[in-house]
Length: 241
Image 1 (cartoon, one colour):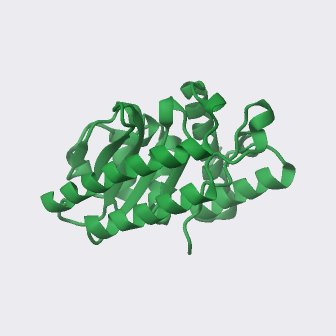
Image 2 (cartoon, rainbow, N blue to C red; image 1 turned 30 degrees about the horizontal axis):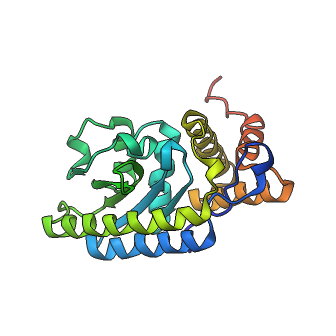
């Protein structure tokens, strides 16, 4: 099954509510790069690219369904490197079970089979962080030093490519939007994805696609569709209550 995409995510600020966050061209480039990075990192790896120039989240693009699932997990549990790309420095975690940086995320990721990760910031020419590349490893052995070096080299090339493509896909008036509102919206969306997963007994990618289709069908922002899903959610009572 093809991984879910983020080109359906739409803005939610006034007149821009129906415009795609990134162009299909940029999404295709990022998907190809994410898969290339996995081939360099080695077997049992998945890669996720978070774009958040100037603190404004634009997109999450993954190499496969696991990359999207692990990224979504971070927004649902409010813990993990994806939540604040600008605060993450180059970081290799060989064993999530022994690392205390993101304990809630680590526990959930390990349940998904993820054993370690390599987080590499994506920077603009002036060294301003505009996103994050995270390679998740399911292999028993940590990423080899040679593989980590090659991933960092690819990340530098990716940064240059994204800088050029973003200049075409993100209008100047969109710079400087409130990053806290953006993070709040991402958390709402991922919570709604979790509700849809439980409601339809489906995978995260399928639930995200359902949410995007709902937003498009009603002509609303993804955030609005998420709020509607959450408003209709009734937790199941505990046994015996």
